[in-house]
Length: 198
Image (cartoon, rainbow, N blue to C red; front, side):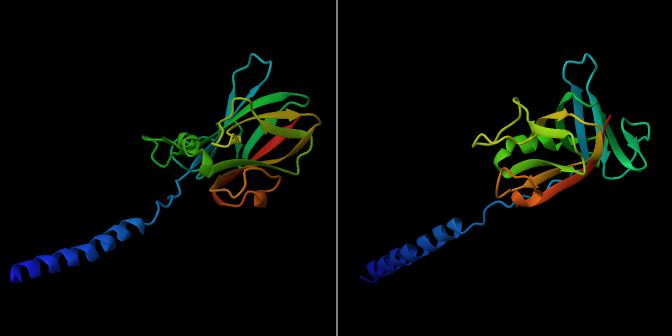
């Protein structure tokens, strides 16, 4: 009789503990994105209808980093300068990299594609006229078909100069807009490329 009482008490105790242990699993916090280190942003630009090879313009977060040269395409002491011709169309591809270890450069662009729903590239035009930007037909998209703007088409008209500010936005609250604030979310990286349309 005493053994039966102990067995019943044990079963009753287990029935209380089992839901408690299960509820702990349900309360486990979701994975929180750790911001990637992005030390290099590139613009690979090719003029449509031209036999010339694409030109890659590179921004590094540290202009003194090993391997950087002022001879690099489009670089001078004022930053990265992109030269485009008026009345022309260009195919442009943005790349994001962690180049903090020159022996092991990580292509963050691939992660952006893999996590398309959690990212958005925004290309903001600052004080530049005669330049329009649309998503390329072969651009990567998120699960709703929204273009990420990793690949875009730039069309120039009049001679002008200004900045194209490249944002990589993490967890945007919207996937379209004409200003940075329209997208919400957090900024993974923000880089200015000076553009001269000649």
